[in-house]
Image (cartoon, rainbow, N blue to C red; front, side, top):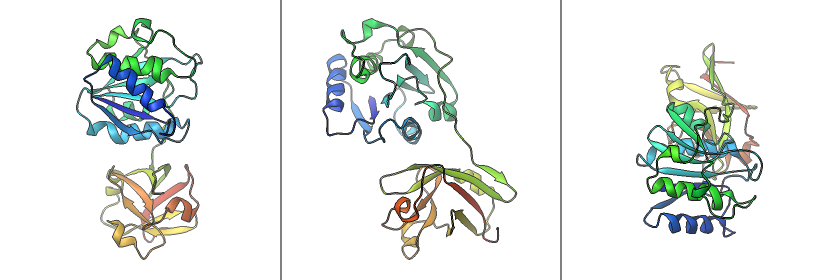
Length: 260
């Protein structure tokens, strides 16, 4: 199985072309699209989406992830085994969130030209480099045939939520298509606050915490633990992002209702 993630969108033929290349090399593979709607060039967003997704795929799945503003430059291509899964893409931090969560990883620089298409363009490495390497891995070639080990790969600077007294301080890291603002405050961290009634401070707003979207239908906005285990700021049938004027990096504080 190959799982495919890009910022290509679906208007142009790029996604289909890469799939054609993959099936030419590994005709029996099963291709699954994670998303092709990553904000153009947004490496951090793609890294977060990979973290949300990988654990729900079978062991041995090859993740082909291409969000590559440095295409054609001296940035390297990587093929990695992270835990029980494989990842192929540019060396620009795309795999940072997965590596941080899983821990065990082995990365190799893509240097074996025999695995690539004959004419490698400077603008479409998904077609000419990463797609073919993903297909060859799916066909069973050993990881070390891709090229030499690369232990000095690029890692994104990932910020953690933290305790300050009785409060947890975090930030917005991602928006989904519904306008829900996903934070870096996970449910396990919030459990350390105990059974106290909690509220969320965000900009000039004090928001309650609810357990399902329906409970927030009469509220401007609210906090909820999303399906990936992180606190989200949401609005019932509205975009919290637009309604509250939220941006990535906005500070979010959670604490007992009495906190100031």
